[in-house]
Image 1: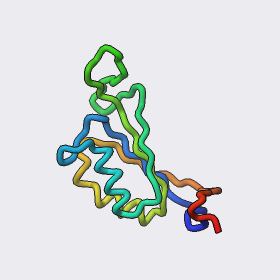
Image 2: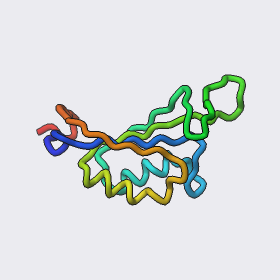
Image 3: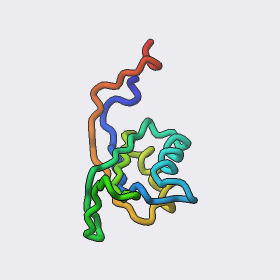
Length: 115
């Protein structure tokens, strides 16, 4: 679909898998809000290990009952849509790193949008 092509922004939100918003996992709350806001799409990546602002290393341990692992939520859309969305979730983010970068979408294919 041509509306997705061209210069866009990529938003990345770095959080932990145990972060919560109103009792729900934060990543689920963010995805739900992204859908409600009309963001083109979002992907959640679960990392095997990471280190954040507290200088604690979080890593997967097969023997541990609970795992605190880094998550990255990535979204691509127009700058206006991304910035508006970010404002809508600001109160959900108590500990997070958020980045925004320029990208160029060269190709977007989906059978739903084929003519």
